[in-house]
Image 1: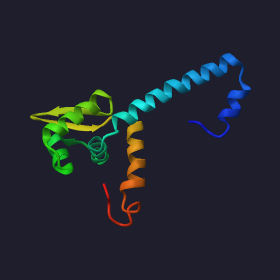
Image 2: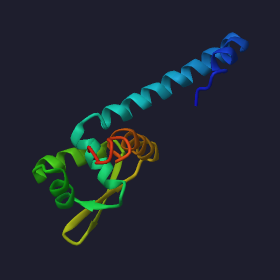
Image 3: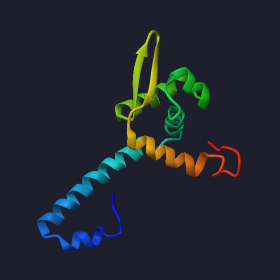
Image 4: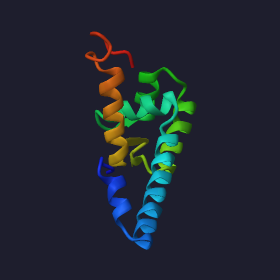
Length: 126
């Protein structure tokens, strides 16, 4: 996590150590960008919000967000391939759940700021 002293800390390091720190920051920024791109769709974000409450099937998710099951499945595949959700097959159904802790924290923050009753003046907007 970057705090207010990070820039001063970098200036205090010798050049190889500062370069190593910056390389680490570049790598972390690249990973964060991949994560944000993976959730950067209204449908995928709504799916992740639903999964915050626990595992769900494709049918439950598509009914809740009002999309066709085929489209929901495509979004779930994208999220699974990017490591954000996992699927567990039980009988004829696959149950999806959140897998990525950073995604869970980001979705919780977005919900709190944009979708909660407090953020929208009393009624959820997401």
